[in-house]
Structures are given as structure tokens and as C-alpha cells.
Image (tube, rainbow, N blue to C red; front, side):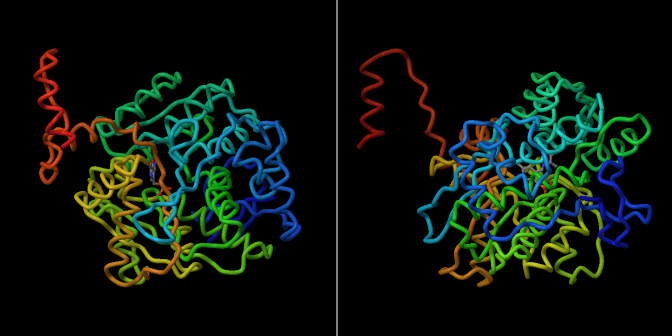
Length: 414
Ligand code: F0G
């Protein structure tokens, strides 16, 4: 296994601590060749094992991640694939069911395991919240120091609570995620701290298992579409790589198409897609989905390759559409944070424009748990956001008087 530049092809040792090629290109991990479709029975056999490394929905597929028998694991990645009754052939892979409540745990178990192996004592990331929560938890488990850079005032309450509780040191930057990202790259290089953003190619090897695990749950019958929210574009990149490797090994034949969904106010990837990827313009980002409030995604080049390779599309949705989709998923008992709901909003839009056909099989990747962002739920359900007046009577304030409560209750159950 090596690090290889996706731009010029130059190779480096996997143990080289670097996040870009000398030419500036992004690096990816080159994997050893898989033995072929028979590897699937090895992966299946691990399901019955009591060992954490086998139970993990990341390390169960270690032949496609890292050669590691003793990783830093909780274990993670045992997430459900739900059917969604609103549409035939619609599934949701709920990554909010990971130990810290987001998909980030899949990349972080790989990244922290590798940081420990390289002998680092401190790890760092810039984050819109979930990466910091995940990194702080895994660093605590591994006995490493965690340093996080967050955009001040723009991290949802649940995520900030986690980063604090798990013991990380927090630098609140008076700026946005893109500022924090620029700073952390600089600092980690200068100060001998291991960088755990998705710029780190090892992390993306863990994130590939979202797709591997989903396909295993579908008995290796690929869907027509995988829909994922796009921020820093780590998932879009990792999904393309996973599909490429699975196809090369003959484990799947058909390639699902990737649809990446961005928030309108943070949609540089969408805009680039619209002009045929001829140019890319970073933007100042703003959206209610704070997880994807990113204007200059570092993984742009890799994500572009994923969209081209899978004949995919990029769509953008408004904050209003995101919140309506969130209400729809939440009220089905599934529950997500706003960024994850962008997938459902994107599906609606892509169906309306005829790009996704009603008979096609679709998997939404729900990236984060409902409890990550309790404030937005409160705002939607207490009439603080225009357009959601229908929830205005959901909370009924009463005195502790039986007759009064009964009379109000009659109105509710009638
Ligand atoms: N959904 C959630 C819940 C996220 O937290 C993120 C990214 C994304 C989607 C976007 O994924 O970057 O792979 O395109 N969160 C990062 C963080 C940036 O710092 O937690 P992506």
C-alpha cells in the first residue's frame, strides 16, 4: 500500500506524513489487489465473531481499509439500512447510528489507528462539528491529545457538547470552516500534529465502508442511485473509490450513480458541475445545515472524479427544502440532522426533473443523528421558523388540573 497523487501519479510511502503531493495534488491510498468475489464470504463469516475487530462495520472489511488486526475501535459502523415506505425501492443507510452519532466514526477509527501507529501524541482537525466530536472520542480511547478548530457560533449544540465532554482542546475561530481548515493544515505541518480532516487519505479508506456495508446489506445488488450530502466532499470521494475497487475485484458489475446534494448557500461543487467542471469557484458559505456550511471543499478533485466515474450528478437544495425533508424523515421516526435531510430534498428535486425515475432503487446516506442539532428541532416545532406554523399546537401548556387536561386531550385524539 502506498500514497499516490491523483494528479501526477507520483507515489510516496504510506508512512510518509503528508497530505498533498509535491505538485499540490491530492493523495489517495493504493490498495492491494483483492482476491476476488470470494472475499465476501470471509466478510460474512466475521459477522458471527465476538471480536470487536470483526464486529466493526469498518474492520470487517479490513482488506479494503488497512491491514490491521488491532485497531482503535468502539466498534463502529454497525448501522441499519432502513426501507422508507414513502416510496418503493427507497432505503436509508443511517450513519447517525454510529457511536458518536455520525459517519465520521468510520474514517476516524482508521485515522486514529494510523496516528497511533505512526507514534503521534496529538491529533487535530478543523470541523463544522461532527469530525471534532468523533476525533475527540477516538483520541480519548487511544490516549491521544485532541485539538479542534471550530467556526465560532456555527457548531450545533450536540456536537460542541461532545467535543467538550470527550476532553478535546477547542480553538474557536472568529471565522468560518474554510478559515479553520486553512489554519489547521498549516499548524499540523509546522507543529508535528497529525491532521485528521478528510484531506487525510487514510480517513477516506474508512469512509469507503459506508458503501461496502450498504452493498453487503443489499446482498451485493447495487442500487441505481446513492444520494449523499456534500460539504468537504470526503464521502463523495470515498464512495467513488470504493465502487471502483469493488468493480475491479468483480464483486459488483453495475455501478450505482452518485448524486451529491449541496445546500444552495454552500454549493461550489454544484456550480462547477453545472459548467461541466470547467471551472471551480470557492464561495462564502451560509446554510441552516451547519455541517455542510463549506465554501471551499478540499476534496473537490477527487469528488469530481467520483461523479464522472459513476455518471453521477450534483444538485443543490434550499434551506427550506432541507427543513421540509428533515420534518418528513423525523416524523417517520428515523430522525436526522439537517445536512442529512439534504439527501431526501435532493431526491425529490431529481425526481421532479426526471433524472431519477420512479422505478429506480435509491439509497439515501443519512450522515448524522437528530440529536446533533436539537436547536433546529425546537425552532421548527415552536413556530420560530416561517412555514412550519402547522406545529404551533404541538406543545400544550397546561396547569396540573385533570379536567383541563382531559378537555384538551379530547381535541387531540378526536
Ligand atoms: N453530513 C454531515 C452530518 C456532516 O457532518 C458532514 C461534514 C457532511 C454531511 C459532509 O460530508 O465533507 O464528506 O462532504 N462534516 C465535516 C465536519 C465537515 O467537520 O464534521 P463531506
